[in-house]
Length: 515
Image (tube, rainbow, N blue to C red; front, side, top):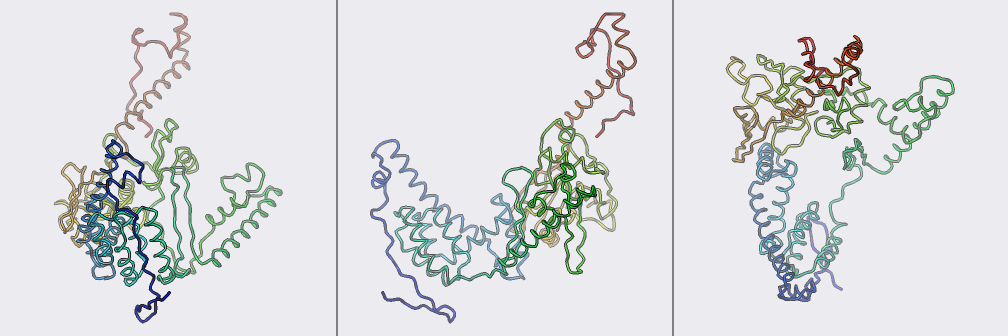
């Protein structure tokens, strides 16, 4: 078989073959009945025929969708266009009600579809290629060169896309991509070094720290960690025998059970409780505390509503109570019991107080820009929605939670440059966002630190506490014995005090709910 040599930037590439990828029969209403074993004229055949046309209409609609997104494309590799790029991400995120990171991916794919796959995109626009097929092709071609994409576009667009079965398309595409796999730009193991935090798919209070790197380095780390765990295990055994403090004793498990911890627990203890050495480089302190917001009813054991770690990660109520029990200091967030608004307001200074910043972070666990999911626990700044007037602070732009929100550094810069503009509504419950390109979104303010429902539950719990306190005081004073002598035996918990003309004493001003 002869092969053609194609040139790309001075290198030599073996051009893949051009097999004919066709269907045995055109896909239409008649052939659909045969393929799906349906009888023409039946309800099932009618539904399948309509699905066929809907799929082709969806392909045409998807092509229009990509065209509209591509109009907002800003070149990604030009540092001078960074602000325009980020503004475009926000505009797409607002319009499609998605995240800014997802918007960036959509912009990249739309631009690639129109410029890198023009022939195949035309088949999508004609309704010949299912949306699923085209999206898969885009994903596969993201990391290929422009020359390779052009070759694939030429071949795929020539296939019988309007009639091919799904398995035939997938098989042909996989074989075609295999020709380019070895020629694709390779990323070395050194460039793949990374550390990622992966949350559990279920809210069970666990997460995974995934370390990726060259195999020799990861194996060496694993062996050092294993050796350290075995050394600590030996030290734990000696400490238990001598009655000395046990090192790396997670949750006092070894001291409680009298047995050393298993190696898996010790590997975890060593890697999470050892001092990180950064070669003399000073690591700045975290900007905020690591907060776990626990609903008061969950803290009292009256509810199992989950807590929130840093405002975004669910934590089981049992774990939250355990963490709270281990802490010697709790921080109470003072809020209005009805609308959750922040109470200690200071409006005469430019920089928010520490307490105010903590409150903002609890209220805005992620950047306030629509679609941005960056957590405010790091890389965030408090921003004045209405600019602060340094000469006349009382004239507007005050430093108070009603005029503040947390923005990530990137979007704070865009807001400072005037590329995105937030306006807080008159009642303070909604922020209206507008981009320079005209995209608009209205975002409700998160004030749900203490909801009216929770406030009512707390009030009910306090009233129950008062009732039980009064009953205990009556018992201690011998009141029930006196009533038994005068009126006969009574059950104070079932007694109807309205019939006896008694009322529970009103709480004095000094008696305030413990929250």
